[in-house]
Length: 369
Image 1 (tube, rainbow, N blue to C red):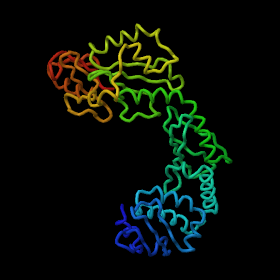
Image 2 (image 1 turned 30 degrees about the horizontal axis):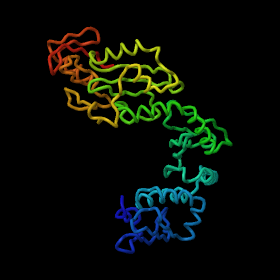
Image 3 (image 1 turned 135 degrees about the vertical axis):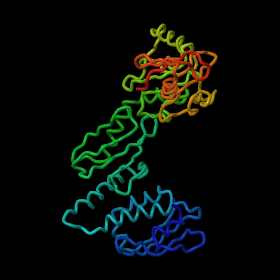
């Protein structure tokens, strides 16, 4: 929504100029109309906006000035901000019944004070229901991390559930006296445990072409690195001991990966646990991985020769014809279905033997698990 959607959200809020940078009228919430005025900068961005409202509305929002200001700065447009503001007001103005207690406003006030203590500059987002809070934390290497705190309905009796991009689940230690700041302190200590892991995967992500996952992050220990147009190496980095030899799996045509597999087995004693995983792999395999500084990712993202796409759901073409003159890659599922439909193919247990759809040379594929 843009400024043109203001009328749909607040029919009694009318633009006062042609530029639609000044709105004045009433904000209708829970059967009440509150005098309301909002002034936008000339660029119509919310940053730098000014809100004027009645003393009644100021009184309702007396404990929520911080969160209203934060949402004003972070909402994509004025219409979205007004929707969130109305949601907050509806919750505050709803009639109290027997099932409600005075604890809810008190709890919100406590949370807002805890956020004030943390600093609003560290807040990434807060949803309108005030149950999901995203906070930003910098580690000792100045990497920025985001933790999402999911507050339980019985908060603070029940511990929040916290999620972040880490190689293992982050479990918060919680008590009735715990605060949001305590979660950040624990999270910061957890980040320090993985500094070496972050260093190792950062180097891989920056200096090689990672084919899988599509958008690598710190929650994934697997990396599938391009070796060439029809070959790749999948590694699984140990987050606790990231400099030891990772589990390695070569993928591609036999004539390409067999020599590399042999070099790895032959040169294992040369692995230096003081060095990085990338440096060790290049030394032991006697290769230089294709890098973003010297190549394009599409050079190693060949389409499947059957469905003519690169990604099939989450899978990429990893079955390659072994004939050096062909080298066409296929998705495992595509090749399996193709060969299974040919009368000339034969199956033994979970493996099908047949002919390459491109060059008719022998090719095999195992049933997709």
